[in-house]
Length: 302
Ligand SMILES: [Zn+2]
Image (cartoon, rainbow, N blue to C red; front, side):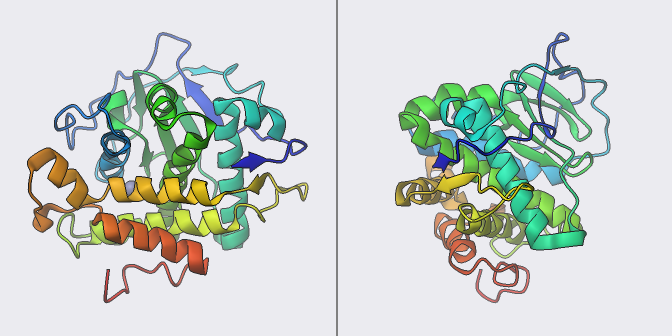
């Protein structure tokens, strides 16, 4: 992934929680609890990404409880000014990807679109209106406050090291795009249609596969999406970037997770879909760039 060095970055929606003694005083998000087998810090990208997306599902199940006041480190992203900064800083690359996602969905949905409240990074724990969350939770979307939450240390320390350098950054981009997909579902009212929470054809699985499809839609358009000034921010997305995203999507398939953590596959408890499904729906978004093609709720074959 390459950034246009001249493009300006917009840091208004990106912030870092902390600076005033940390958040996390709110109630635990609860669902899912601890990671099976303590996957964080494990040896494979698969184990790591399990931690990333297993818990994305809890975001829309929780809600309603105010996690209490939070303070923000306003300096954290202040130095992210241009695409050149995004090429040299993981923090600024995060801002750039957020900007690209914002621009893409603003173009795609027009007047129907409402921005996220913020992409909030944290280390350790964070308070949200969906409850308090710790680093174990991994990235998630909270529909109560329209916010995306991401443990930045998780990507810095684990993903980047394991993937060996900046190219690993696109895995984070895929995860961000997936969470942005949940926001789009929230904006379009899709999230509120979810009735069945588990099973291979459940609404929960349809919601997750659609978020993957939306992530693919953005990936298709990323290198042609312009900012408000008419500048393309992401100038190159390589085959290797896409391969990493697909590998990430496969690694978080319910069947892969269950094989790793339980030694068997139990379709009845699926919440996100199989590895094959997640890859295929990301690819559907990537190949078609079509909201209609991403309508997993209408699909006969998931
Ligand atoms: Zn998700």
